[in-house]
Image (tube, rainbow, N blue to C red; front, top):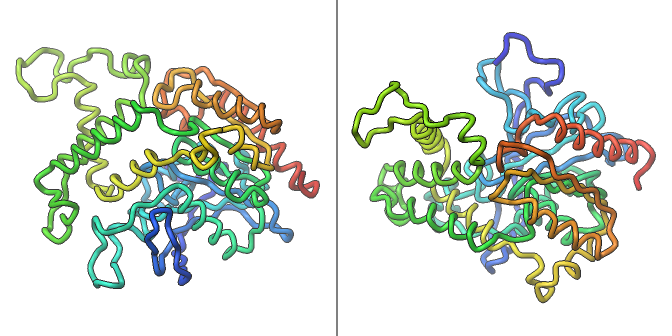
Length: 385
């Protein structure tokens, strides 16, 4: 962490654990009798409760979206580039809510939580959750906070899918939807990537059919492989070439199977880091939620009919080298919105960073994001739409 907290940071923040006693019936038909959500907030909720922004996280994200938990933190929250005073999501104007979704491993009820029926960790017995389940839990969170309508719901990747789901599931509770680097459903290729990652975890001898905590192990090798595969899909070929090329760690070939190229070392480092902080059962759950997401499926696979339910305005952003969620997938959403006669702004941003671009402070991206959120702030100050 810097010696002095930057002026555009939300500063030191403390997460809060909120308990919900009301049972939650999931898409699968299973019921969570009670659950906790770990939440962080930034900024101040105005008297009209009209300036609230919900941040929806992607696969490996959590509630810690901005600021620092302590002066010893090495890095700020995962979207600190976009959230803070004077940033795109300006906490001088907005009250920002970020949470760890159900099934997560950062404090909200998930596979590592204690199952009240058994007194032991849920493990693989934690029910599979769908995006609509997250949105239902987020709506209850809004109720708890006294927020009847979000000024905007914002998210990238899997977070963007939650935003789309919000717009059709609770259309009257969203004024603006910001969908970044996302898609209306996964392609067969993306589902295949997720299955390979899950199999890497499931085939690890330390996985024990998901009961690894009872055995005092973690499927570290499987998690590393899953993360390495995922990371390959988050970066573009251009980004990898510029960052690593064919550079060798020691400047020469060693004729062994140990990592010799810089890109190999990078992937091993990312996999190692991820395997020590993320729960394997949570990874399995999150990728399944991605696979199952298909809101148009409830409308005879007619995306226009599905999106016609929305009442809010939209900003959709894609990135040129994102091949995991390509611009064409964002344009499917945009075209459907236009056919449904919705108010939509769209930008395809030039970037060499691949899917990870949505997390980066790319000047044109941030300018577009800030301009749109300024419009949201102005509407909020003026009393809404």
